Length: 378
Image (cartoon, rainbow, N blue to C red):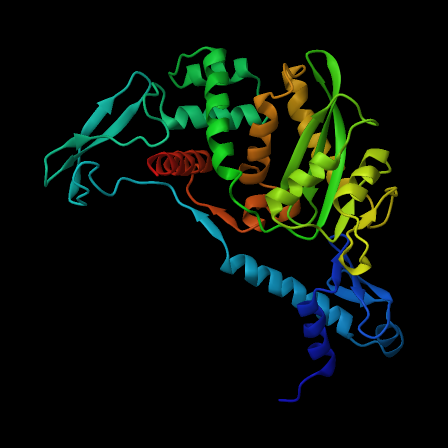
């Protein structure tokens, strides 16, 4: 079979990673022979390129092939390195570790029932409720409360819903559940490295904490919508955003090729501290002064800001800077919430973290608790 020289050169471009992702439909490809860069833009289902080969010969040039190979390569790498979180089921006796176990009745709790088991080897009876030990309410009731809270319901509305299910608890108890399990999940999930893209976006949204005006600085991955980092600041113009960028680099284990922000001076100063390098080829491109149209707008961040503001309005203000709403909503956004812009998938699905089970909250809590017990035993 005759090889296409443009395709071969496109593979070389993809391997050398001479491609900068500006947006979902816009890529910049460095020329192999000169110091120029060409814009590869998706129009409908096809790509166009500003290079002479595509403009005048009307062929699929090596730069377009390079972008196509790069996209395929990234998907293959993510599939090969996918982290799978499975629900934890009873498989062995906690005493003798035998797998010869059988169901042995139901343990009746005040707000629900838990399956009991019996070991046929040592005759020990036991129940396993990983992550929800000594909790009066069932895992389903607790995680239902968390789901309702982070989708926009107030604590008292969640309380009324649980009463209809026969679970009579105070709104403070519900908040205690949410605080407890957010801390449990965060300590575990922060150790997982997401496979994010090479274009990140940062923006800020105002909120009120105990009646005082504050700003939530957030940074997300443009390709996967993964919420990488956040900071709560008392000032917009005077805030040092370098901590936000540094936090994102530590979580992602890499640095982006593009950082997109508005014209706020805080971002420019932080960019110089964290991303600027003398070597131009290794330097992160900083795109500022967002336009109202074209593929350089900040619509993704505006949607994210609106998403957070819709949740914050129900609370009628946040009570403290380290409120559970910040960490908890970040977990909900990344692992639970399905995004239309991601074709109904979660950001976790896109960064190579596959959370199995009908109730993803339970899967996350079980794995976090199991990891915590393993760390303590070591």
